Image (tube, rainbow, N blue to C red; front, top):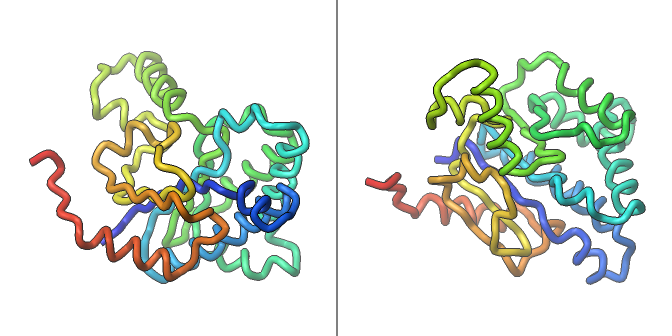
Length: 224
C-alpha cells in the first residue's frame, strides 16, 4: 500500500520538441499531466503526493522559459477562473504545501503561493509542491534550524526540521535515471521507478497502475 508517492516530472521540453511545439506548450502539457496524476492518486486513496515542480537549478534556464513557467504556475492556481473547474476538484481535495525556497520567485507568484498555503487545511489529501527546491540546501536548512533551537544534531531532529519531514514510499521519475537532488534525506528507503523512455506529459493512468502494481510486488526490508 502506498501512503506517500513522489514524482520527478521531467521531459516537458523534449515532449514539445517531439511534437514540433514551443517549450511553453510542453510545460502546459506537463501541467495537464499533473492534474491527471493527482486525480489518479485521489482515486487510489494515496494521502500524500510530492512533486518536483521547479528546482533551484532551474533558475539557470533562459528568462523566457522561466517567465513562461511562472505564468503557468499563476494560471494553474487561479481557482476562480471558470475554465479551471477541473482544478477546483484538486483544490477542494488537497491541502497544498509549498516545499523549498521561493525567495527568488516573482512577487506576484510568491503572493499567490502564500495565499494557497494559508487556505484552511482540512482536506483528506496533501499535495507538496517542491519549488525552488534542492535536497542539499534542505539538509543545510535543517541543520541550521537545529543549531538555532539548541538541539542535538541527530537523525530524528534532522528529519523533523526538513522542509518536508515525510518519507515517500515510492518515487517515480520520467525521462531520466537519477534523483537530481530530490528528497535526498527522505528517500533512504523509498522504492524508485525510473521511466526513462516516458516523457512526463505522456504519463497516464495505465502507466500509473503498472507502477503501483510493481511497487506491490516489492519486498521492503528496510535494511533488515
